[in-house]
Length: 241
Ligand code: NDP
Image (cartoon, rainbow, N blue to C red; front, top):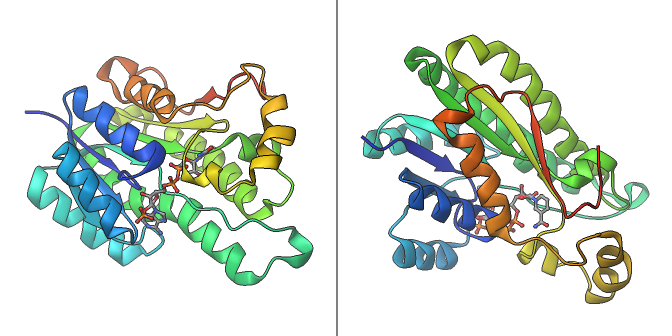
């Protein structure tokens, strides 16, 4: 039986590439999304991948959604925590709603999703948890106190949960992408991209979503069982830790 992989925010951008790559690698894939029905339905029709809609910032919605996925497809073996948003602004002008939204979607989601699959993985002695952080969680970024805090939190979560589950065949890892050509980066003004971001990337280009998907497929494999608590960085050489 094919292993089941669940990708949050798996219908657009990096998540779309992850869903497609996992399907190509032989997984049965469930892709979740938050609100963009049009993009999700197009993705489903184009790829044949199952889609599910719920808010990853809501614990009960995650619990119910995962139960539905498992009833439809079987137990989740691979969880990819990918859904994320930005609400940029300098801290001295940031309102509580922009802080909360980013923490809820990018960090609370790790608890909400992982908590609802981890017991099953432990019982089956197998699992892969892969969370998408960011270069800006590693180095901080002007105008992104909320996002940098959430993405830095991903590393602490990953290292703690990796220790708790290593003896149960469950690996827990993070990926830290640099700037990738998706809607999220298209929201950055062209001028800022050209003058402030591209000159900092030694490869001289943005990354492609497929280049992050490749990292996920690598960490999801059974053969990656000795890699846990790690961060795989893919940023074109922009920041070396
Ligand atoms: P996109 O904006 O292109 O896609 C985001 C996806 O997440 C969509 O499927 C969206 O659903 C879903 N989503 C957003 N909020 C929620 C929510 N509350 N509940 C459920 N699903 C939600 O983002 P990217 O592909 O660019 O980013 C993917 C991940 O990679 C994020 O975690 C991001 O922080 C991270 N990242 C991105 C980088 C980049 O350069 N693009 C760089 C480093 C990290 P819907 O379609 O319904 O809106």
